[in-house]
Amino acid sequence: MARQFDVPVFYRSPIISQVKESRRLTDPRKRDLSPSVLDFGPVRFKIARHFGFCYGVENAIEIAYRALEENPDRRIFLLSEMIHNPRVNEDLQRRGIRFLRTTRGEQLIPFDELTPEDIVIIPAFGTSVEVAGALQERGVDTLSYDTTCPFVEKVWKKSRQIGQQGFTVVVHGKRYHEETRATISHARQAAPVVVVRNLEEAEDLARVIRGDVSRGFFFVRFGGRYSEGFDPDRDLQRIGVVNQTTMLATETQAIADLLRQAMIARYGAEAIDAHFATTSDTLCYATNENQNATLALIEDGGDLAIVVGGYNSSNTSHLVELCEQRMPTYFIKGAEEILSRYRIRHYDYHAKVERESTGWFPDRRPVDIVLTAGASCPDALLDEVIREIVGWFDDARPVEEALAPFAEAS
Ligand code: SF4
Image (cartoon, rainbow, N blue to C red):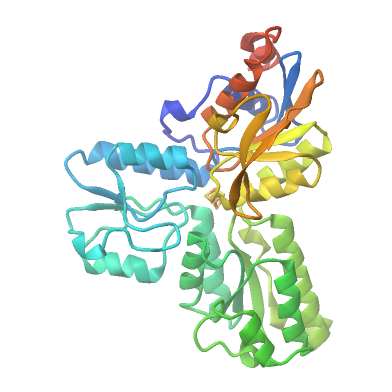
């Protein structure tokens, strides 16, 4: 999908947007995943070939700002955070948009306060059948400003399709993430559903499928993560795997392979098509590209990595997960977290706490910094990080000089 969206200019950036545009022009088919290098002399930034706003996020931002423009006299609500980036959500709130629910689904403003005159924007993650129904019952139009990403809808469609063919839907996702809640809701209209968080849980599900453990084990291990009336003896005979679009694509693939093998062990290779549905065409292109670009980026090496994004952003945390396997990695929501050359405040997504680290910036020249960002992060935030760090070096090349190789190309 090559559509250009009308995204407010303040989310774009003079540095990163030029690098991206130059790479787009010289490699339109995105064959070259090697990082772009911005060489400032004492510090070099290695920038991922793909990162930042994806199709779904640009689409959501365009619709949200259009809703503001088209309805200056009406109350405008977002069902919950539109995307997981604090800068974007804060800007929308400053312009008068109010959130109806938290990202975990807790009610902030009762739906009973809504009237048919109000505008409600559905976020890029989509929403459940039940919530959409509750809004429609109150006369709220849920379609005019629905920003649900088409790639998320594709997962719902596939879930319905395989459900109608008698397959149970296994969702690889985080149970309480908005998108997974919405996918569970849509999938269970047509099929039993169970959620697995990671490969370890998938291995336990495979044990149930192979008959290595009792059905009682299933109910304890997957408590709260299966649809009502789920019967493991009946509902694990035929399955298909879909994912929360921002999970690690390689992990989703590994989970699908593992469960497929469990089906073969139970029913034999010749019967596999009757027991395991093919669903690999539902993986999100942006997640795939960003993760592949991050792999190429860390392969290229660096002294440290900075990953920029909202701390509740699932896709960003997966980029952090990839980077931290290879180098010290700092997950920050913006340049304001870089307190000095010696101190940085960053998010430990394993422990789900912010930490402060000292001595994080190497005392050598040049320092190679691997830089990337999640799909909900405006490019402008990376410019701020670059300017902050480059500002420490009196002898750093000016931005125009570091950008020269990209200016020539574009
Ligand atoms: S990451 Fe993929 S599924 Fe999620 S909003 Fe972006 S394009 Fe859509």
